[in-house]
Length: 167
Image (cartoon, rainbow, N blue to C red; front, side):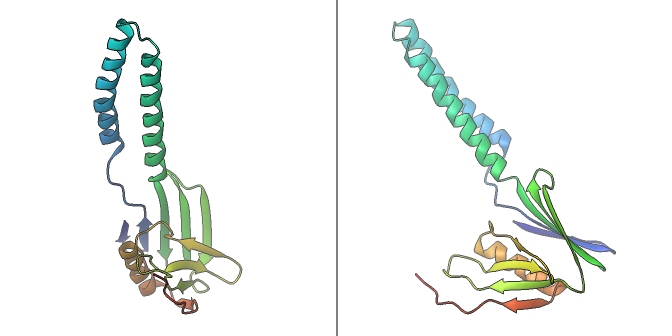
């Protein structure tokens, strides 16, 4: 998902993965699975098959860990801030972990065409000394939306070679 907000001084672009369900709905789904599973485990434990109860607990714990990990991965963000003097790129989960700053007049956008019809083009912001890939987790439509927003603001410095599309 790509959102952009403009005020008088700057443009703020936020790129994040599509998030199909919230952490709260994941917790409710886990609860809906845990109640019958642990209920059956307790029933079997009372009937004498006690090894089923710890295994049911491990199953619920593993599912909970998997849901948490996926939710954490989907909190990843690329925040691109453009003002009149500089371009700032922040990347991280929940809060920025990496940060790059480019002078606006030296910043460029490199576009590498997609190799498969389902992929989006690869976008890289760069200056004279370094480059930063942005939006690599986006689907094709969101990547094209990010490209359209960035093209209006930053000069396209390079285009990648036209590569043969493979199916």
